[in-house]
Length: 499
Image (tube, rainbow, N blue to C red; front, top):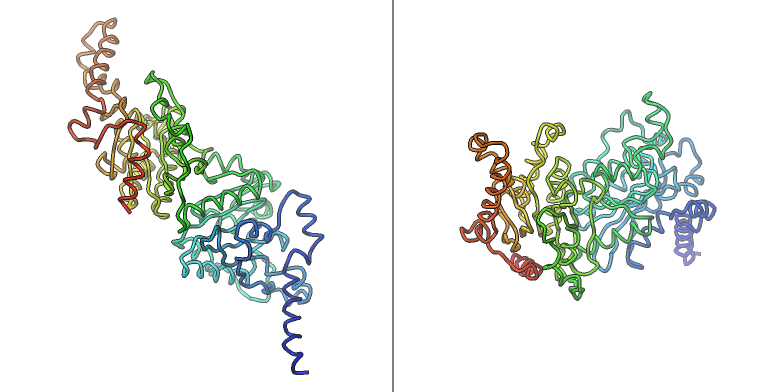
């Protein structure tokens, strides 16, 4: 009999372990699949390397034994609706957590909070990036076994918010209240096309007397992408996991060999239009500099006048920030300034070197521009660049004017480790035509109307000659004027030396 005890104990463990898996709830899983969705365990399995997941707290049950039979909780609410542990992705360590929508709509239970606290603190102690699948409906009111009044002393939000590790949230389906805050506190948010993300779900909105709304009306992806809440939108959960794996790859310790440059990477000399007033797509410039198929575009739906992305240059992960002349001529609006400041802060936290591609007439100024706090966000962009400790390289592609250009370069052309310009670039304290009109205001006012515009045109042409990149380099306001084909190599060599 004594020899059978360990076996009996193991059998009980294995039986209970089975009940925590998807195989034990085939009907719920089938319903989930019919909705075109995957389970929490399926998403985790897709993210991490096979056999690498070490799970924490799989046997935890909800704190509801005063109102529900324990057997019911074991079967119907495995792991208290939160699955998590440590793993590897492409061989690099990470932590991963996922609310389980098949357990009480992915709501946050009291014991589940103990698990998430434990897991985030473990990730901090291990100093590993963490991926959090945040689908769910927020706090769960039915956990009666643990008495309390307000439950505002929960630690998860403070621990997760303060965590100085790379934090990636994946949002799919319905993500409301506390679950949405966890997504919002992440460094980077990936969402599926069908996601809804909001500070409150329908019940809380109705309870506040604010009306009746369907879940699909609250924070849909088209809204949250356009306002900058979401960084990447993927078609479905499979696509979202693929993006997360690629982003984790930028953070992994494993060295990446640079992909062989494509033909497009040799076209840097031909990208800029001959007409300096003609716009061009700066995405193509980034594609000539980055390794093939290495780019993840961020916040594409918000403030398109500024482009941000993470990519690789000769195998090294790099952040790119660039003015986009096809939108508002690349002027820095309030939204673009906020987008840029957020991105530079992300690169600082993740210690990614930054390449800034400058082609801007400056900040978008005027009474209308000030309505949404331009001074606040413009100054935040300058501050974020000035505070960078990670390497910065600046490349003036075409126009580098005024405070906008300085903001793109960390506050000064001498702030980056290297500041270069392409041959046809111009730099100045403000837009050149505006400088002529301001500096010659009295002279222009004295001229007959028919001569005024011709004089402005001629003086602007003279100032443009003076503002050429070669003249800025001659007085050492920038470090060099380069052949565009050299750009990728100069960036890579500078960052290697900065290590």
